[in-house]
Structure formats: C-alpha cells, structure tokens
Length: 160
Image 1 (tube, rainbow, N blue to C red):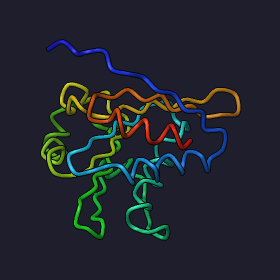
Image 2 (image 1 turned 180 degrees about the vertical axis):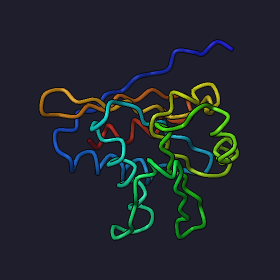
Image 3 (image 1 turned 90 degrees about the horizontal axis):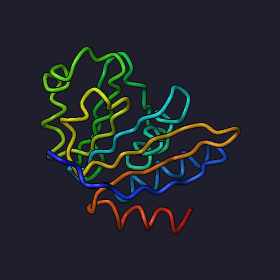
Image 4 (image 1 turned 30 degrees about the horizontal axis):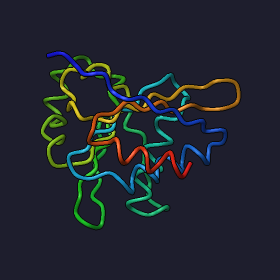
C-alpha cells in the first residue's frame, strides 16, 4: 500500500512547560479512535508530552507512571473514553502489540504510543506522528498527519 505524502508542521518548544502545553492542547482535540505516535531520542519529551496529555483529561494530580516495564497503562477519562499509553521500547515484535490488545484499542480508544517503529505497519493510517528532537536548548516537535488531523494541528499551531 503506497502512503500519500503527509503534511509536516514543526513547533519549537523552548521550555519543558511548552511540551506540557502541547500535550494539553493535543488532549483537548483528541477523540476516540485517534492514535498519536510519539518518536524521538531518549530525553526528547515523549513521556512528558504523554503525561501532560493524560493529566489534562484526568486531573493534574493523576499519577502517570511510565509504561516502560508494563508496556501499557490504561486510563479512563471522566466521559468514559479509554486512553492507552504504550511504551514499545522493550517490545520483542509486533505480534506482542497484538497480544496486548493495542491493535483493538486503535478503534475505540485514544492511543499514545512511544517508540512506535515496531508497529509502524499496524498503526492506523490516519495516525498523528509526533517526532520530538532536541536542538541546542530547545525541543522540536515535528508533526506528520493525514487529513483527519490537518484542521486540529492548525488550531494548535495558530495558538502556539
């Protein structure tokens, strides 16, 4: 299956608070069936963004442990929407993601996936790809997205 070229939008995140703000903004616009793929080197802000996203829906005091060892943490927001936070860094192969139920969650939940490369072919085609990187003192978020995310990303970048 050939992939169409997706638009790319880049945001500079000079402070840790900017990464948190991006997580909150994405959280406000995400809906069931959305999959957000978070990639980038260690320390680029993947977990911080996911933590801010989840806390925006569940409350700032919510404990959001890293799913590095559990692979997946699930949450339910007050409206009943399930949020899956997965860290696939330690995953052996894509079949393990299927066994965890992650592929089924794509249809009805909001999925935040750190280290998504292993399941790239299994992720929904309309996934939002967020590649986080560090340049000097600032963090950079580069978004690749399909039509489903285009208007939402515009809303985020217009207010950044």
